[in-house]
Every structure is written in C-alpha cells, then in structure tokens.
Image (cartoon, rainbow, N blue to C red):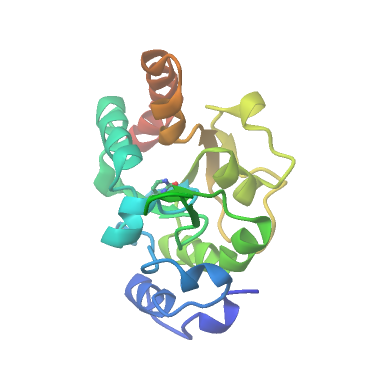
Length: 212
Ligand code: URA
C-alpha cells in the first residue's frame, strides 16, 4: 500500500493535487467522496498538518472547512497568524469513517498506521514543493506522522524546536517544528474555553516566528 505509483513526474502543487485526485494508494479512496489535498500557496512559510479530512472536508474537497476548521480560523486570527501564510494539509488525504449502526451518519475513524504510511509520499512532495520554514502539527496523529511514533504530544506541546532527529529522512527540508492539540480536541474538551486558550498559547510562538 503506497501512493508512490500515483506521484506525478513533474510539476508543482497543481500537478500534485491533480495526481492525488486519482490516488488509490490505500483502500480509503473506495468509500471517500474525493481526495482532499493540501491548500495554500507554494510560498507559504508554515505547513500545518492535521490528521485527515472530516465529513465536511470530504464533501467540499478542501481541508479544515468544518467545525474544527472554523475553530482553527478563529484561533489563527486571534494568534495573529495570517491563514494565507500557511499551507494546510493532512497526514491522510481521504476521509476514514465508519457508518453509524442506524442512520446515515459517517463517524470519523482514526486512520490506521498503514494508511498514514501509504499517504506519506504526498506529504513528502508537499514539503519538498512548499519548502516551509516551520511545520506545525495539529494533534498526536499528525505529530507522530512527522516526528515518529515515540513522540509524546503531552510532553512537548507548544515547543518550537529545530527539526527533531526523529523525523525520518523521507520528509525533506530543514524546518523548525511545533506540535499542539488538534482543534477538534478543543471542541470535545470539558472546559472548552481553557482548551482554546491553551491552543492559542501554543500557537503564539508561530506568530512570533513568522514576524521574526
Ligand atoms: N480534521 C483534520 O485533521 N483535518 C481536516 O481537514 C479537518 C478536520
């Protein structure tokens, strides 16, 4: 299982996006509506990485347009981060879900490690094309996809550090790294306001990095 056979031989983000639309590198393409590729300028200084598209993103074909995306927009604006300076993408580019036992609701399912690995060539290509100065991971799945399975978000959230040694060589670039919680964790938190303020505090160094 790998996306490698679907990568284009040349071209920038548009060529990657077009090729990813036909990706069958893992089984998720079968039930998902479409590939949800990353979005933003090739000149973006920051790449932000989520886990996988949700229900709304799967239907819209764009990352972070559902409830978690709205919260992300709000926190980025409040932190002073211009979304146009950010390239937003996901570790997995197809929606992984199961059907509710009754009804038509599609319930998010954490992508499996094999699916994350299969999708990795797209992330590697995005990093190589965008060439960011900073990679920001939203949530443990994204953080571990980049910094390795031993990375513990609870121990290192909000730390802006040089590229960790644990990042595998297939992800190109000499970027700095910061991991924080996923915006959907804020939506689920018992104390939403506190969780929001903590996410905001984690993202402030990103704004300072961009201003510096
Ligand atoms: N959650 C993610 O991780 N990515 C999206 O695009 C939407 C929700």
